[in-house]
Image (cartoon, rainbow, N blue to C red; front, side, top):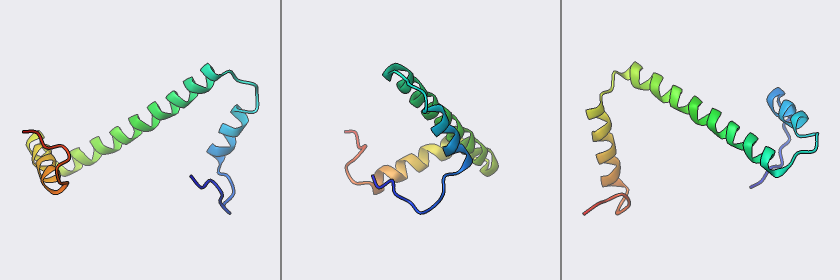
Length: 80
């Protein structure tokens, strides 16, 4: 992963760096990583739910989307 960039760090990135300036054991680091992942997953779910409601989709619509994806993605996800 290429982490170099010419852009300055944003406020959120600076706050996270401040958090990590103190000594931290591996368990704390892992817990913080999990919290961040959980937060981002929840945010993505909320965004998807908003789009779902906005579009007025139903479970049947989702089933059709999944089936269409399975047909176009080759053998991945196919069950016999």
